[in-house]
Length: 544
Image (cartoon, rainbow, N blue to C red; front, side, top):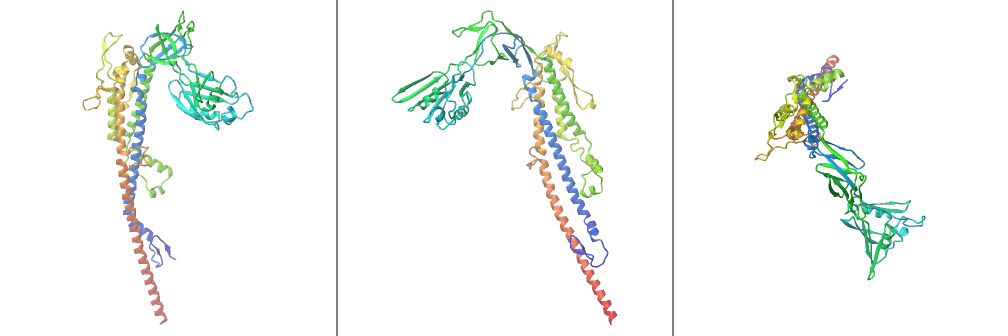
């Protein structure tokens, strides 16, 4: 009985040798080299993934703190209107904390046109084409204007009125069209408001098709003139109206009901009681009721914003500290397939937890980032003037995180921040612009074009530090987004080189293994031949 093997057949000689085991033992050294390369590649993959995770985390944190560079976040205001049926309002960081008086005589309006009757009195008529619907027999050009811009569209008898609606709406004009087939009425309106809003239709041609179309819409009075056989038909709507109002006793007009004056964004919703417009289009104020709009700094929102920033900072800091401090178990190398075969699933899981632990233990890039993040809050911001403390009667300069109540805990907390909201509220009471000055300062530009970080606000420092670390991590290990195509990062190159070494080692393994089997097969053949000769000789001696 012969036994099949990778190298051929053996066992014919009856030698009793376990060739597979012999070859396996001879290949043990080469197998160890191959396993070591496979383990090296696995660790590199784990480390690259760990860097990619850090990149994703700090990128998300960087995106989340962008709003803290904006005045609208750092200097929030609340606005109260005592009559929201006349106006509502919001305020940006530039708004002063004052009360405004508002009287509205007229709201801004646009133009809205509707067919005065059915386009075709015959309810059974086909509306599939303008030819059947409106008696249009020839193509014509329709000139449409919104009061500022005009466009020319071509109308064909085979078009339906819905085709015309679609063409108008795609023209880019501030005019919107619609059609109700049940009512058989056409609608035109401007998407803007104000005295400049207007709708004009005109057509010039040697046939009456353009005239029939414009008149057939029944939007209002049209005018048609004929000179030398050329028909010119025009229609022009009344214009829209500007909003007319008094703000703090001064009369204004605006083309829209939504506008911003002195940092306050107003949204007019109605006309004040007692105010109106006369027949000549002039405002009549009389004894109109005043709407009070009060603007005040929103301390609670400001405090909540800074608390949110501190919480986000602590979360990313905890993640970074966890990766830097995580224990690296160097004796727990990635398991080979042979090792996994003799282990239980629970043992494999427990082993791999330790094998994957500490991939970024004491990593220089992360420890440097952590130090820079801490410095952003602890280092003073230069160029901030002192504020008068209403409680102590002394001047105080809010130029660092600790000066407004942001401090770090004890050493065991790894730099975690704590916010004393009472201290922050006291700072805001003394200087409502303190957050803009401390967090949002852009910083002065040095002669070499870089930002002087000593004058840069806390969030700017954080943002730039995170951006620099992102760039560095991209060079080291790429990103999750480009992982599939990354060939240029440091780790991508190391992994590629290790894969090449592994392929060469596997090729050597196969060649050496095949050579051993070839030798042992040759030995088997030789032993079989000797056995055959010995048997023949024994038979020959017996027979003689």
